[in-house]
Length: 351
Image (cartoon, rainbow, N blue to C red; front, side):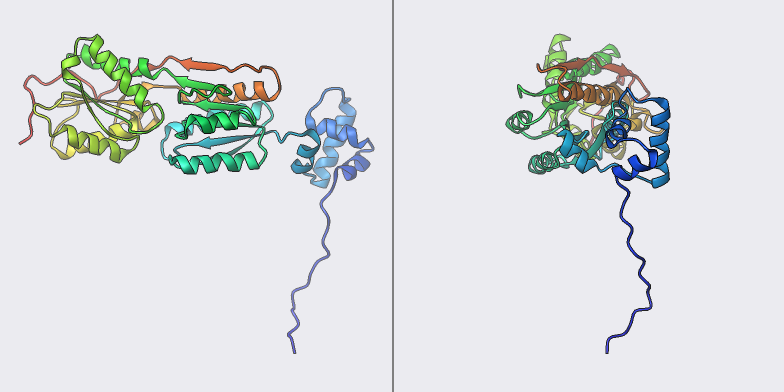
């Protein structure tokens, strides 16, 4: 014989609807909708009555139903390439703040720097019927971005793209790399090496900026690049490769701050001092670079501003205020800290 449960069930109560709010506030359903949307044209008395009814009933608007009626979700889809890089924390902050100011919510996901996973992440956002896409430093090929841009508005952040249907907001990586090399050359360095960012978004452009600056400054004979990645291990491996050089470079320009930190670790393990033996410059000027224990000279690109402007570009397209592509390029600056100084008097070698 089955045992009888002692748990008492309570009669289920349905969620309050917009009609319940309208009846309680003694107004029409359409007027409640106007208040929820924040439309003008509602008297202060009626607005207050609706808001009071919403609070008393604990009413939550049905976003799905509203999106079906309005044919828009007021949700922006954002694919962040690399959640491990603190630079993208600034980008996310700028996106979140500006989206809220403009009346949009944000749905984030990531492809973890893997093109196939990024493509799947983009597809999942499209399936959720977001109003537009922001792709932060994507590693997917341009045809995938182009395909998404034919479906809905797309903004690409922190990467150059040839996709013709997308907007972009990026940093002048050529100029930024030039700032790093010019700073080191100005301190007296000639043997300036570069640890590149591998296949990361913007890595090839920063490498090109390094090459151009070295040639422009008459240092073409001292060009030395090694493969790295936008990771600490990538910077560590790159620096270990540079340590095989004889004589050693007196300065290293790393593709980003995280790789620069990896390079600092390799130098320390080799018994070299920074900056007395080898100066190091990073890129992004993240919160890590500003830590007292690291104090890394770094090229500043403005992640929060990029995120905010990306949202503004996207909303312009969503709301039909612009149909032509917009491409914004921000000029970087250099933040000098204690990881850079004059070169040593005598060339260093490792036995």
